[in-house]
Amino acid sequence: MIYIIPVVAAYLIGSLSFSFIIGRLVKGIDIRKHGSGNAGATNTLRVLGKGPAILVLALDVVKAIQAVWIGKWMAPDDVWVQVACGLAVIIGHNWPVFFGFRGGKGVATAIGVTATLCFLPALFAGIIAIGSIVITRYVSLGSLLFTALLPFFVWGMGRPLEILWGVIIIGLFTFIRHRTNISKLVQGRESKIGSKNL
Image (cartoon, rainbow, N blue to C red):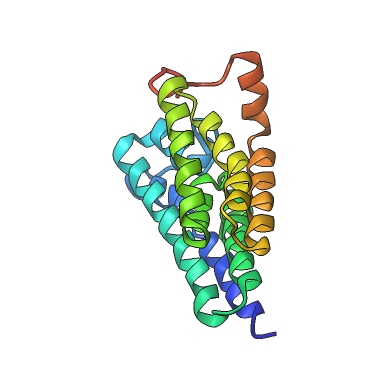
């Protein structure tokens, strides 16, 4: 039962929607009523600009790192608890209890989780994802590539089975949350970085 505590704590940490909070502080708006309607770093960039977007991205990564470390501190020998904390913080970000269960898509949070659980696989997948964003200017495509490639790097680099299952589930979350983006990518209607629609 004691292991429920870090998982619940991770979910509550994830439920801190920094995009929403910064939107309120900077412009007094509900970020979910502007741009794409998503409470995340990309929509913060779209609505508030680069500075607030970078801050949101950093805070979302940090809260994910903190959540996984709670699992590491309370269950240093139980990788499942650490993975569960990682999943819980992403679930909290996507479906935050403090903000009517309307959150973001969890990519920045997933970066923090995977960088803490399996740094090198996350780094290699991240390099490819960033490269795809630079070439195509599609943030959503980079996000999808990142989580799609992670399981292969985790498996190929011999990381624990618990982490492999964790990144597979993270990938499922990402693809589910990006359903609309996937449709727009297929149709050639997805917004690019620097375009007027972003």
